Length: 427
Image 1: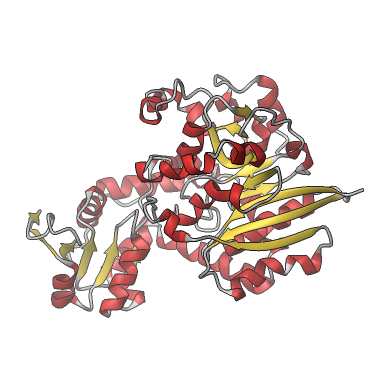
Image 2: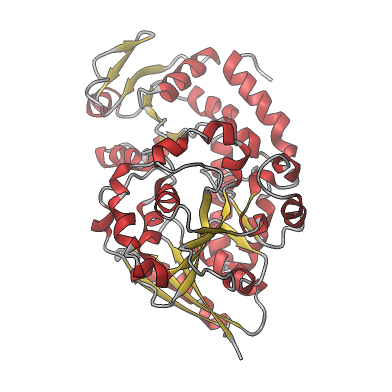
């Protein structure tokens, strides 16, 4: 007799291949008698061509049914998004009105499943809305987050879970009309988005799963970093087998940055899960994106230009301008920004214009887009105005977390690049 599991995911056009990789990893790791009913919550605008890239898995495996459930995005019009957090992430808040089963397992599209999910699915949820794994990053940096409880108005952050892997008691969520309560919190614009909403609204009725079922790859091959957290020594020891669920949280994804810790896990699954053309395209994109975010590449690209416009008059934008000049790039003409409050000022002899005025003066310039939240939107704005795509260089700020997450073999080189950027002295 087959064991049926209800799985829920969310996706958009930017995550369709990643969604396929997750589902493939589920099927590859499943026992023969496990059957999966997969619900993929999506926008009505998701094309049939994109949907087929996932639906095609039903032709290869006989233990899965996949359906796409369209979501009315007007419900989430007040949701706060970023360059790597889209409105689709909020769809999980309405799963209880989409999936009819009594329970389901929600999975993010940035995980790899290395276990039969029955282990998690059979967790007893009596009296609990959710079951999840305590957030690794928050556990490790608890001193930084301990006061965040006041923002969420909960007693403590000790039991705060990550929402990338969540077993949901849909019957109980529906019985207490929790979906309505979730949605009332959207306009609060919490720092960690819908994850904060789930932790706040379900506080006290969350069951904890073992660390291995949502292991952040930040801690790959260095699980000792979690030794003095609330995770037990047994949990940490069990996680060392990497036979649960591996999670690639944050903005430095393996399909964008090739040098991230544990990326080989994702690429190994992707190579087997994706059609050759799709795999080659996403692989080449990752290679190019990794190259374009190398400081030496940025300098070489800028050295070819007579006119450079820094898009975004922010701390990061100003740092890029100063760093480029420090490294010998003297062709920066101005900043530009959509904020009227920032326009018509001057910084280190560089004027700040509106985007329109900057285009009027330097239409054929190299535009260095430094926005970290709205980079895609701003790039589209520039292209609509007439800027050629090849004349837009999107700068991604490498935060402290980037260096923490680097694979050891790249760390020394990246630190040398950072020193070059900060001092202007070549490696």
